Length: 271
Image 1 (cartoon, rainbow, N blue to C red):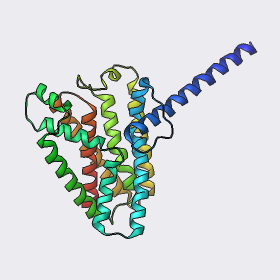
Image 2 (image 1 turned 60 degrees about the vertical axis):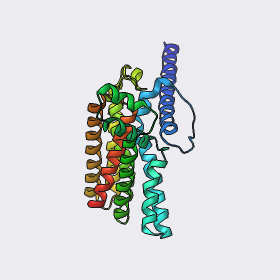
Image 3 (image 1 turned 120 degrees about the horizontal axis):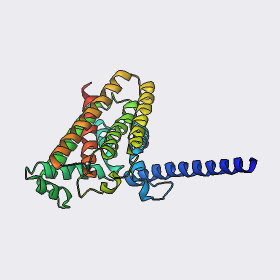
């Protein structure tokens, strides 16, 4: 009986260790896939793609922490306001290899073509850059630059932490929730069971990080209101993108993230 009990205990330890390794692997898969900075642990397991998506808020927290450090350095150097605004705008796009901007451009190319659904879906996956993509990304960057330059002396560290967390959390949640377009890379992953727990994990991370941001913020009401505006804009952008393009995809997630973060930074400037 003692031997059986010990055997059972050893099996549980092995299972727990494997689950821990899955979590670690999935987190660094998300890091390696969505951040261009060197990944400390390089391992890929195609079966963990849903769990990887669940770690998008944590990836947003890594991006936010580095953004906070960058902002502190810029303010210490006391460089011109417009240059600070440019660097603060450039960083969140560059740190993810402009991946989400690419999705934003692809979606606008397809949606603004006003073609039938099948043609919009073809344009979405076409690697050619169209006029609508160029025009809309120009306005995106102009608006981003104007907003962040206006808000640069009012931005708090908590705002910089929460902005990428919220937008990426909504993007990850949407991919885990909504039926993908037929050509999406997430079609097979959507069929896998147990996606509910990953969606719950997304919201747990957002809630914890929002609580931390509210605690460290000098004006928690303003910080959380801007985060709510970020989330609302991201959800609306995602719903619009899915309606126009017939389902969910990685490009629509990028469109969601860019739109949500733009709304969040505008809210920081206005409030």
